[in-house]
Each structure stands twice: as C-alpha cells, then as structure tokens.
Length: 98
Image (tube, rainbow, N blue to C red; front, side, top):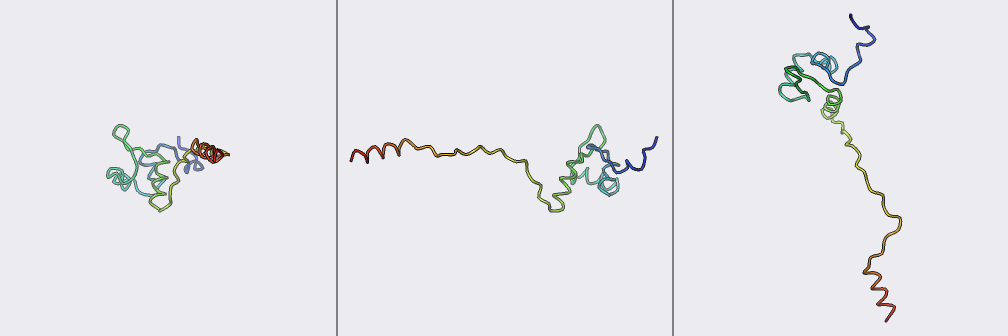
C-alpha cells in the first residue's frame, strides 16, 4: 500500500540510503560513495548503510559554515558576598594593636 503524497516529505530519524538521498537531494549512488568514503556521517546496520537525520543536519550546518552551538555548560552560582580570608583578619587585628 502506497502512502499518500502528503506524507512524502516526512523523514524518520534513521533513514536508509534511498530516504537519506531524497532528504539531501542527491542520488543514492552519490550518497553511497560519500558514505563509503566517510565523507558524510553514516553507519552500517548489517550490510546496509543507515543515516541519522540529526547527524546529517549537523553535517550540513558544518558544510555550509554555520556554527553548531555546543550544549550549554552548567555554571556554578557566584556567592553574593565575598568571604574574607584568614590573612586579612590577622592583618586587621595587628593594626588594631599598633
């Protein structure tokens, strides 16, 4: 049973060579060559090439010069008031004695 035309542009996260070539707009032969030369991100499942849509999107961004934003790094909150070091307290105590 063939899918309706309205679903023809929906792409799965993991695609075979035909689906990925449709997604990228290149021929399956060209995509096979790119995958076998490790030019494009792909992996083999058994003896067949598979392509993750998210990895292809990242690859296309890099190829087009778009900077891919890394995952945000968690930052610890700063203290609201600085903590006095022990050395400063001793210096004030010496000044008070003088």
